[in-house]
Image (tube, rainbow, N blue to C red; front, side):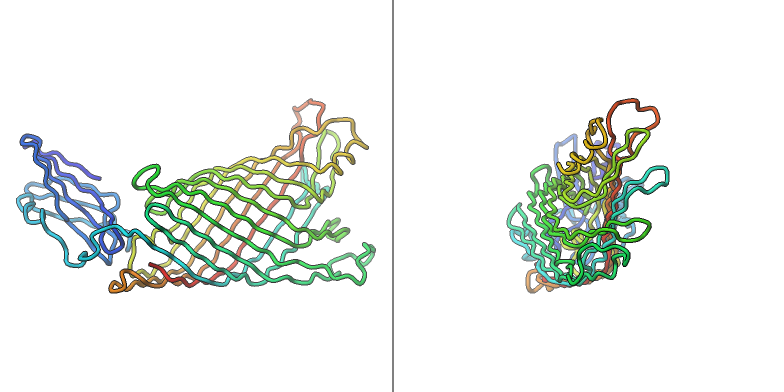
Length: 423
């Protein structure tokens, strides 16, 4: 909202008002402080362009000069309006908003698509450029099938997305010929992975222009972990990871969001301990990971679904997070440590960095005669990364404890295409 007070104790204001995708724009307000009179009217309203974010107003002689952002075309716009013409807009109502005077009670977004995800995952124990243990993960990168539904009723909104791919056989070709691991004649499998994303939004709970989002994600990520030594596989382990993510986010009107998330899962991993003069490294097949992060991001698709009617544009979305976590070491590994050291394992805490970026192209079309029913197609490329690190003991630490020495990097990336029906 922008405000200007002239010398005659007349206050002018400009505010952006959104009712629905066909009824949005700038409203002028005139307040006579002396006579305590208020007038208002529509300066600009459009079904094709979204103009009105970041409004400002000032006076140049007999003219009001209004500036605002054209979000549909990513540029700024200016209006000049004669003060004496205010009465002409006080009762003005554009023809295109007929039958669209009120906010939608119900809306939905449903679709399906395909996604190819490439996984790059590794855990290691390393210090001063010396690698003590290294584990790579082989996960099926077959095509994921995507189904998605999002519905809004009143001020509440539910969204569910489900992804599943196919299993892939994992042969013994990766295993060193010099080592017999007992897998002769067996076929290991990078089993199918499944992912379920669900969100529940409470619109207007925190403020009229924001929403509270509660999110839950459940993934079954399956594959084969390879224990490496001098770039040769010396052990392998099939794994079935149950990944749970809980998040509480504040979603602002323009696609910006921020909040906290909690993640927990179990996965075989390299893990090490540092007492300052010796490094102990192990392959923990039952390592549990708990992580809490603060995240902030931007989602342009959320903006397009709410504000735009017919829209074709390159877009981007992304987020970043900073957090910390805790490892639960399996009893088997704790017992192995006790055999070689009397020192206790210090609280195994690590730091974590998250990032996601998505770029693509969106085509959206709505039919006004069908109350805004339409379709949306988007194609793009998405990448996600998670880096977790604990650096072990520093040179000035004289405590009689074993410090966690551990690093894990997960990168997921790949193209996708999705088509949806929107209303």
